Image (cartoon, rainbow, N blue to C red; front, side, top):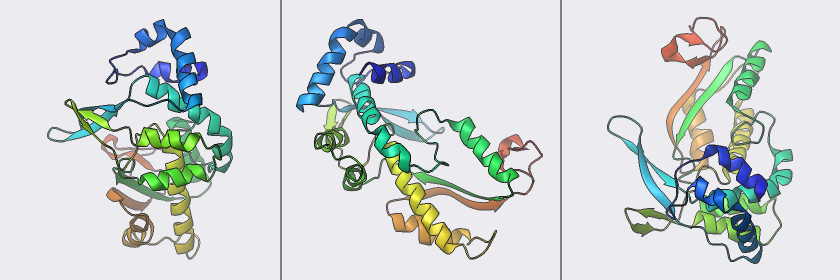
Length: 255
């Protein structure tokens, strides 16, 4: 549990509905961590509802965000560290999201390596509400495929159904998950499905189906996924990371 607390400590973050901030929790760490471990082991642990806040995405739109209590950030991190040895071996080498000792710069470097090796097609997709619209049943099935501990699944279900407090009103959560919990496992399932479908649709070297075919045969089959952006492009002079910068990822001017 100390390792789990150390992992979430640098993120700091706002307090949850219990109003316990990092400094307050840390001041009584010798008591808080053993108590948290005891609750997890006995099955008496009950996560607090998330505190609902809204952050602006542009001048007129806001995205809902759930702020967990600090103890409810430490607990899933501890669970995740227990099942890391079970999930890590099945993750694809090209998967970098929410994985320990992996980050965005490493993912970009992997893309550059593929580009230098001659690969020039890029599938760029942005899925709206991917975590917010995931079925709890599917999430639990994904976990159960690798985790045999009978105490883990009920705990995961508690986190999924902990609800949110929105302006003092409790609202149950019947679908979706917070970004920090089971995120890697969901992304692994998505990555595997996309790779399988694209491999079946690819007919010859450097030949891919168009965007319409990808949408119909890959993403729509997953269900509950709304694509905000989908682009399959070929860039021989370098992949464009941020078009507004007018500079390609490889350093050459964007075409």
